[in-house]
Image 1 (cartoon, rainbow, N blue to C red):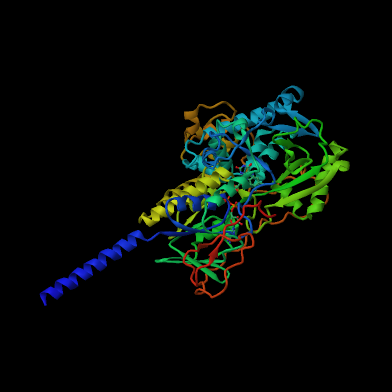
Image 2 (cartoon, rainbow, N blue to C red):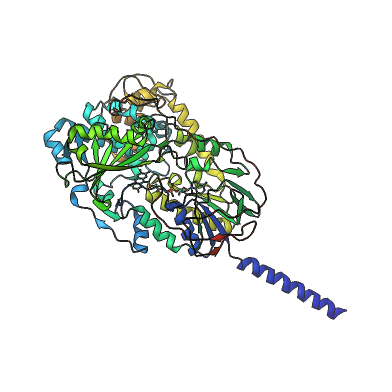
Length: 614
Ligand SMILES: Cc1cc2nc3c(=O)[nH]c(=O)nc-3n(C[C@H](O)[C@H](O)[C@H](O)COP(=O)(O)OP(=O)(O)OC[C@H]3O[C@@H](n4cnc5c(N)ncnc54)[C@H](O)[C@@H]3O)c2cc1C
């Protein structure tokens, strides 16, 4: 009896210890949704750490958003450190950018000016641009920590103001203002739709990074080549697999692609906000997340590549780099003729892009050609064709990239950096420092992958950060109230009103003077009054539609609303359906087991990375 008892105990112990060993040895699994650079990075990093990873991509090709450039600009290690690390790791060669493309150019009423030409030939415009840059730099310097841009109530109040209002106070001459507008809408969105705090924070991030740093090299083939390098490393990719629903519980996540289900321990959501809004989540996201899905602004930017038999501009060498036009052509650059002939890529952004949504591709190209033709009459005869990319109305993106509108930092700052149970979020829009860039996408993929590992290790991501943000929001809202004339009158000059606190700096004279760093960092309204210069009454408007004088496409249709699909009400996901896995046209042959498909293992195939479909 005693011997039997000992034997039983031994068996139980063996059973327990082998069970523990099994749990310990079990390969953790993750599903990554979205095959843009953020998702690819997350999948790659997790796989390298020994995870079993399945990447699901809605489109037939991998790589997500990337432009029409076949030879994308690459910043140096100062501007884009993570991007450069991956280029090195995958041994992807870049070509140094020629000197003449490394500073911006200007196309003013059809005449090309380099920055130095501008100083001699259009000194008033050049001076005004300098004044703008100086004032912007002062504003950027006022932010101590770009990860916490709303650190003071004064800075926080900048989030309630749009960039256009701030520009109005600078009273730039018309041409300079048009060029500045063009640059801002190309990089972010229409100035009137952009939070001044976001603009300041981004300029703080890039402070000390020159145009030369940003356009240091070209990557032949563009970002699809980088995406392809990731794809080659990944074992399990399923293309043409749009995720429709996600259910998470204490045991793991179930992801539905139509009627097909996949299971894993954790999930990385690497899709843009508008795409996320179309996915059913169970349990549903909370009110703040749902509001962010609907309400976060994306910059609009569409691209047209116009193809010519030969260059129609005077000198190919000069018409290169980034050129800002004051005449409704947006920002343009000359694309090396990797696609044959001579190509110019026109970037229509902000409200210019919004207005042109009402036109079909051909009409849109005609509108642009009319403008180009006015300056380069030979353009029509030499024109051979075009390609168009519309990100703004693509349901999968809903805009080109994140660009916080007024009040949105106050509400959503770093929201998507926090996991929601078993889900972590990636994508350019989740990166606090480099949104809207390849760098931001790559960084976010790394962060999301490391958070998944932390979750596995039992780390909790408490939402504590929400408290200071909410407190700052309250303070900022109080400071932003027009009735608290002190802050705004000092910010914009003019009134004698005092702030509630009676800060005597409130009465600082309204004149523009250079600031010392430490002074700029203080929460001193006086700083702003000098920064903004003397002007009339404060004006805090909610993002009005910008003036269309630079747009100029003939009959101006009503701007298309920046539609965000309504968040889908959470609904339970049906149990594994016996449906067939989605056909993956672009994914021939190689098979690897999918992650615990809820019906039966789905055959998984490698995808090609061919340039993203229109
Ligand atoms: C016109 C333009 C020019 C740009 N120029 C530059 C530049 O010069 N330099 C620079 O650094 N950056 C630039 N960017 C920004 C850069 O391209 C993006 O930041 C980056 O590509 C975003 O990567 P991502 O992975 O976050 O998102 P995405 O690339 O959008 O990837 C998301 C993926 O998710 C997929 N998806 C969506 N919904 C689902 C679903 N339900 N199920 C499965 N998959 C889904 C999408 O198909 C997509 O492949 C530019 C962007 C644009 C639009």
